[in-house]
Length: 495
Image (cartoon, rainbow, N blue to C red):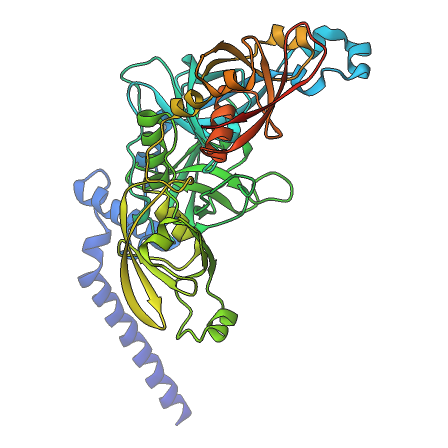
């Protein structure tokens, strides 16, 4: 009986194997056994490779639709528009007057130029370049090297320390440039490229995703009315990449790389870029007015917290809380009050101080914005006419700040620095009869070293102090006359 059962099992096994062979031959053999070199064989191989790529290499960036991203096109369209920026300044500014250095190395050593490096982005075919203010700050000479190794001496057109941006100009034409995109369209999780030229070895490309938007990391806290609303990415960005490009997959400029958070000073996972919508406004103002026109709402604001919700009986955590309004400010004039919650600006939702400062920073004094607020947990829309930091709606060009003083100015040369034994300064080369300096007793040839306790190294420094002081203020100007050993201090009224 056991022998019969065993024989039956063997027969069944044989029949099963025979049936499997027949099925294999009928359904699979024709597709897999194509002759090498034939079109059918090549097509089968490509399909197999495509299948294996999609299945095995899952570390490749893949969209929700299953599309594998290709970074090569965006990189090729962008690298030639990113440049290397060299900022030169006099080493004497750091070491002059140090007897130890002068004893060992002599005065010749202290006159050697120091150099710092960064990156920049060409934004027009005739040579306008955006970089970070901290890349070129205090520079005596700026050089730009293109990706094809061409070298230019750049003119500093203007700066905006409040956003850490600077605009340069080189004498070129038909230059490769990046088109500005819309940073509002950038989404968290979207792939971006960070492109810099940190080592003058042609451009370097890294990739990452947008980790967050509207980040405030408080690195511009010493500036008046700073705008910090960074795009945070995990693309590798190091020090020399400052001023480089953040590019989306359409090869559009969406940000200017500006900062990293790292205890060592090297990239460790987080980098931050200035949104291009802010860049566009700053560049436009500098070209048109010579000075960034910063609009001010005139409020003291804070993020909504659970404690604020409980204290002021708010219905939910949303928007930005107005702690107080400034006298003669735009907000108070329009009817905004302490305790109001700002929800939207021109239909753009606001949920943080960084988002509010970014939105207001896109407008100029005198422009109108519609602000949606919540008062006693009821929504209300208020039209606000924005003002400048002096409480007026006037557009003030850069030259107007110097016109108040009534003089022309010239940056102190390196030879003048050595002769006067001072680090930096700006020389008064002409004094107008009806100007504020003339009335205060300042004479031609006077070298300004400090205004209101702030060091003056460039003419832009004078503009900035006057701008921040405002009309009607009295400022203290400190300096010296060539050939005199005395320090002079003048009190000047800004009429």
